[in-house]
Image (tube, rainbow, N blue to C red; front, side, top):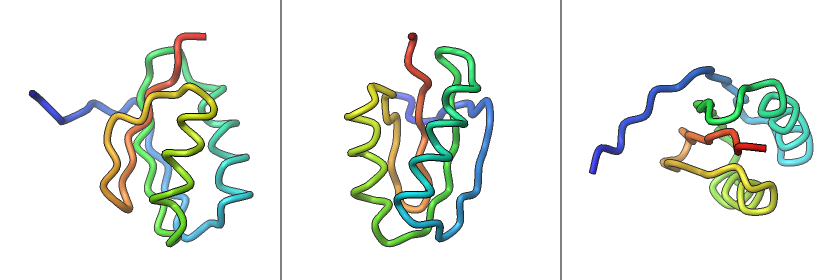
Length: 77
C-alpha cells in the first residue's frame, strides 16, 4: 500500500493550542475543494489526540498521523 500523499495545501500551525487550532483548521478545510489534501504540521503536545478526534467529529478523513505531521482529506460535502 502506498502511504505517500500529494498535499494540495500545507499549513504549519506550530505549537498552537487546540481551541484556536481546530477553529482555523475548520476554516482552512472549508476553503479547500472536496477531496483535496491538507498537510498539517502541529507541534502542540495535545495534537496527537486532538487532530484525530476533530477528524472523526467532522468527517474529514485522517490519511496519516505521524506527529507533528498530519494529512487530512477534505470530505466530499
